[in-house]
Image (cartoon, rainbow, N blue to C red):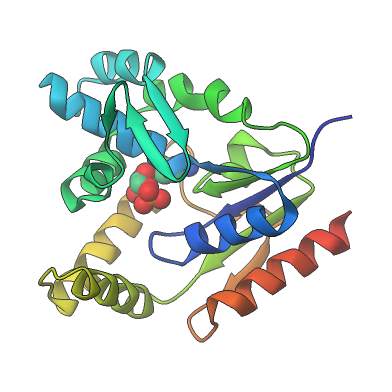
Length: 218
Ligand code: C5P
């Protein structure tokens, strides 16, 4: 008997990270932020001076990633990189290294190892399709590119950064296109996923919808 998994996939800034974390907290489940693993891989490649399209070199870094997650902080060896991995450049880099099959293969077992009692909420792009295809409850969260760009815009402004909404919409569409068009593990809903469009939905409503879906799958 395996521990249950709730997979929450979707495009960037769809709110899935926040929703997944809250669902995990409500249920007392473990939480996997798989995007952070791709961000950490990109950051270590950048630090090592490796080219982001050197598949063998980046995959070797991914396989040996000295990553630790504790109390909401993310560590790469002895360095707290919680903020560093959220930089736009690292997100861009993550999306590039995530298109390399050897990198995805190198991170596969590490992600599956998060499936532990009493259960797991896994956030990403391919949680329901590739990493946990047998998950009892799958959700695909979407929102329009405009709505997602607006959310990102608000976050940036709140943190005191400057941002252009038009640039953010364009970045969002470019990232979506790359994640959707790539040959390995493209961003797409698992056939058995619940589709949740959050364009006009608050976080709390989305959390309740995921919990209700999980309850109906048990
Ligand atoms: O979710 P987040 O924005 O942190 O992910 C960063 C990038 O990592 C995404 O743009 C995507 O290309 C990649 N990713 C992925 N598969 C996952 C999670 C993230 O390809 N399961």
